[in-house]
Image 1 (cartoon, helix red, strand yellow):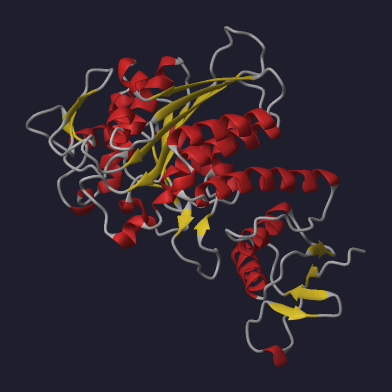
Image 2 (tube, rainbow, N blue to C red):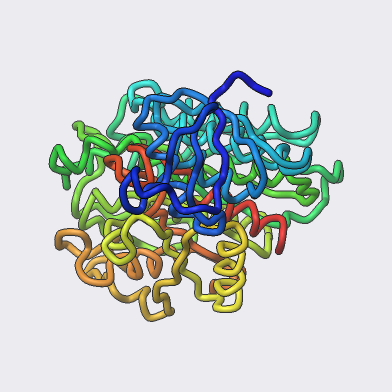
Length: 429
């Protein structure tokens, strides 16, 4: 038996001497966890309590543990300074599954929590390539990083405009995972991630309290990268393209301005009325690049709008799709992997909710937060840049990907919420 502190499940209610509704009680070798194993929120809450006790590592033991309950306890226990794995239990296959989750989530959490000074846009792209290459079989990964003026030369005006105010070049990563070894193999899916490594808001500058956590604004890029890695570990044998839209949204004499008009590769013109609505501008490029692959499945993920957080809080990610059948399948995959996801409205008419007298559309409404329905309006903007009238496309607004401060279930920082959902979609579609 390990010398580590042991954590066991107990079906019995804690002795009254410990007080009411106590989750953890000590015993000779560690702690007993007094919860029903299916009550994952209580299990995760117990993980937070173990972290608060200053425990650095422990071993799960005894009967009753499932993959989901072990993972819930870990999600509560880990924090930005402590991502090390706990001692898993169960069958060899269950422990392997948990190790895969830990490997991919830890990478995503570490990179999201990284300081913006240490993570430039090109560095984000390079680290994504290195991580996927370390996971995938040799010879299955190729990649291209388009950066700086080359973006403009190739027509990727959104990423270039948002990133041109920084001294550190913006970049688009196009990574091809092709396990088939056939150059003409069809692209099964394309993943598009928002990779804003720091978001000041630009000339629509954020207040300090809104800016201090904006290292997390590349959470979409980290999520889809980790999801691809997880799907590969789970046996994904189809060709997938990973597209990361990376930039710093900063203020300088070269930064893009309110009143500017961008003309995208598909001919759509966009008036800039809010430089803090930059995520949709870079994703528009990524979605068009995804469409060029001819894929029938496009998933984009982004920490896109405060409106999604206002609607759902921080326990659910928002799901948007014009393809209603796909949306329902994605929601089903979320249930399968115990991740919170909720569908918010999106119809074709949302494309017209940000009108401009000077261009086909504005990038937002010129009011704080984009006004009412801001998350749906942002999704409507993105829908202008996807193929097939939105069939095969789903947009995830990652309201649950990051917590500004700790609560009873999560430490402050990245959560990884969304990784399992995207990976499950890749392996089940």
